[in-house]
Amino acid sequence: MDLSKVYIILDHPDECRNIGAACRAMANNDIKHMRIVGKKENYDVEKIHILARDGSYIYDTAQFFDSITEATKDCAIAAGTTRRRGQNRKGKLYLPEEFAETADKLTGSEASETDGTKIAVVFGNERTGLTDDQLKECTMGVTIPSSNDFGSLNLSHAVQIISYHLFRKKNDHLTGYTPLSLERLDKSVKIIADNLQKIGFFKVTGRNDMEAFWRAILSRAALSEGEAQYLEKIFSKAAGLANKKTDETQN
Image (tube, rainbow, N blue to C red; front, side, top):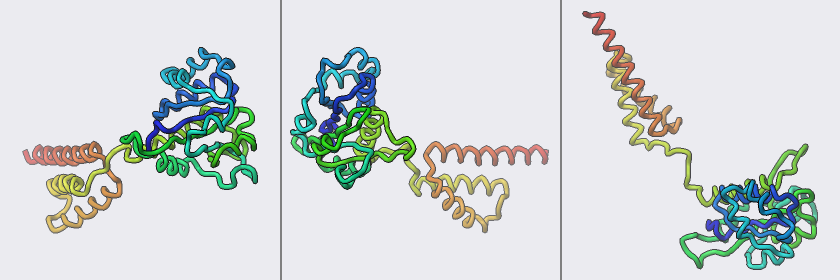
């Protein structure tokens, strides 16, 4: 995924604050190109900067157009975001994660300047969303599932959700932590078994079954390195305290 080829299009947004918040949402997710269908003189740059904060540069470099068609003419696809379904609403609406798969294929890799092409994601006005006519200017539809009782999303929130899915697709190799390999886990299992044996928890003949038990349960837990080390310390300290108490009793 080359996020530099992703263009966020805002069609006649009403609120300057929403534009600023959308800039911040984009900056959070490494998406830097904004295009606005509307007149630049209709917006208060100071109000936009207040909400955009360090993402203000996105608005400062934004381009302005007279129509969605003009704003997306150099892109391979124009994905219109919509909550409503219907005959005139593109038929099949993609979920954000499904759209991210398409975007990944089209934008190519950021390692190559010639690989991939630009794509556009179009967001409608805060009050009306994209009308049927505006959605016709798009080539596909994307929807964000939300409550039937209150389904309308704030513009900047919708930008955040779509931008995040694109960002996560680019960085799908990232995890919150790296689970231990079985080879490393076996070291923890040995430490646990050694310490249990020291305090006489089982006879030597029962060690294999005990190790198999801990290996199975810890592998399912997908421990991190820090968690494994903490667990090892608990059993080592417990064995040390037990042996100390035994020595004191004997003396």
